[in-house]
Figure: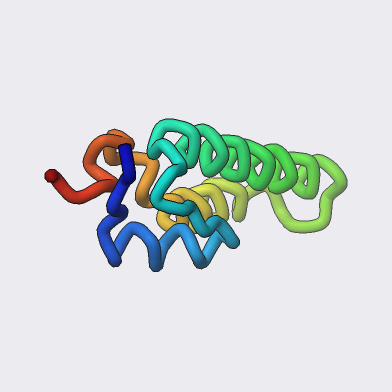
Amino acid sequence: MPFEYSPEVLQVLAEHGVRPTASTPPALVKDHVTTLYLYELRSLRAAMMREEFPKREYADRVARLRSRYRLMSLSSERWVKKA
């Protein structure tokens, strides 16, 4: 079954370097994006622990990171157009 991703979703995914095809299930794409988010979140925490930035900035940096991954708040079924 081909999947037709909405243009808005494709644009946000492209910002993360993700370009699903019509045969890529949305759940698989969401798993990949989740992995990217967790990697960046762990990297951010590691940078804070190495004192690359003050601890007081951590919450704001996490909030900015979360805003870049706004697709995560939608279920993967909502990433595609209804047939």
